[in-house]
Length: 205
Image (cartoon, rainbow, N blue to C red; front, side, top):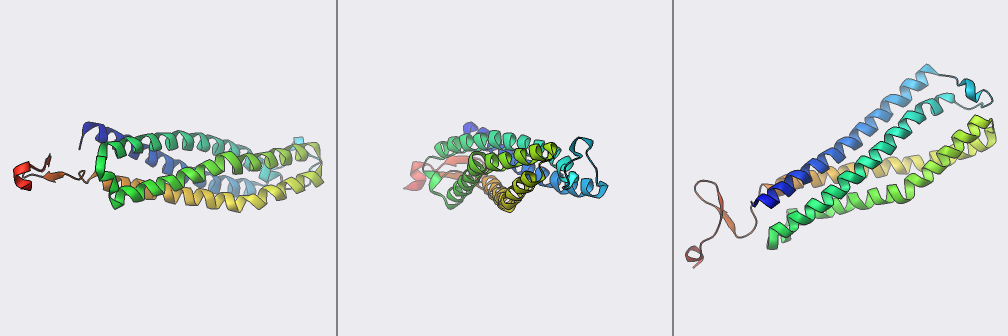
């Protein structure tokens, strides 16, 4: 394996590993924050006129910041993974036609598409409903707060599915990337010492 490909594969694995870990940590954080705050049943003095559940706002405030940070990390990791995969494909030469290389490329493409959908369409729409919900609750406009909360909740299930699908695609790309990195490009064979060398012309004849 060339030094360029080895470096690209290493950075690629780190990017995918960080991306997957970020998604898992984000999901775990939400799973801990919301039940914990709900059990505490807090009341916000600044939202005295709001008759809805105050714990949702208390829990949602830090959770929203975590998701925003996670989106930023995902974007950086996505960019790094795409760039290094391109380098790997170039370094592989004709070896890019292998099934494992093709499948890891497809899985990364799926993850990139899902992230783009979240960042460009889903997250902005949900963020707008969330901000409107919080502003209405703070102003004591219970009707508007209930409407905006319902609109946000209606999108929540789909958002969760997108995050799960993204995590699975990233994990699959990571596993196949590690698998693919262990295989030498076509045209290389293992000699007795285990070093990848090009097949000699006399041996081919």
